[in-house]
Image (cartoon, rainbow, N blue to C red; front, side, top):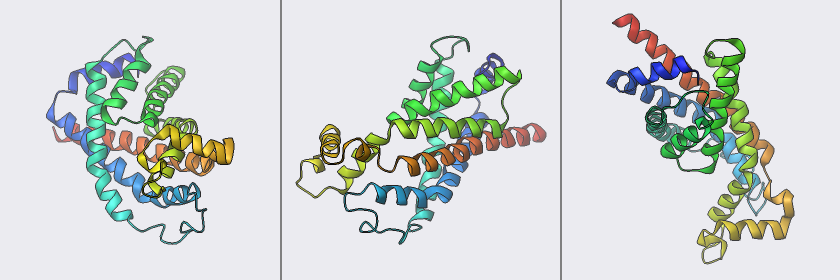
Length: 236
């Protein structure tokens, strides 16, 4: 993030209207991405199932549960972005500081404590800052979306083994060692039975889904936030 944008955030973060804009933008982004990508996530989960894709359900019922997922995503995404932006402001540093990635990691972890966010959000912020520096002005919403797609795809690839382990734990038979929730045990089991290919099973659908998700989620967030800011200025 550029120095001027950081200063702007520092000035307005405390206002209730700013907080409401972030919550609304985050909610819209969360609902949008679930409405579009829920079926792809279902397919990815079935690809990672130890039963095999078709025995796990194949393409049957991939749209089941989409509306409820989108409704549930709105408040979760709203809370995430409100927390993320607030923690970024609290940890405000010079945009040239080497501590910027650490700040973004801490902000992402405050909003959602998962390894994926720790990779995606610092990379998203870095790519936006780099693009802004190259063109000498802050990125547009579509450019933020492109940065989100690249960041999401990279984060998806490097965290695929953890996602495979999570899927195996969820689908494990009750009473088995994997069902106990030990991630290392699940990873070891996949490695022993399927090797490296097993650890990265479903990596390409996951990358495609999350890249598209990053494009929609982060692009929709920036675009909605800008629109709400513009409406607020015109109404004042």
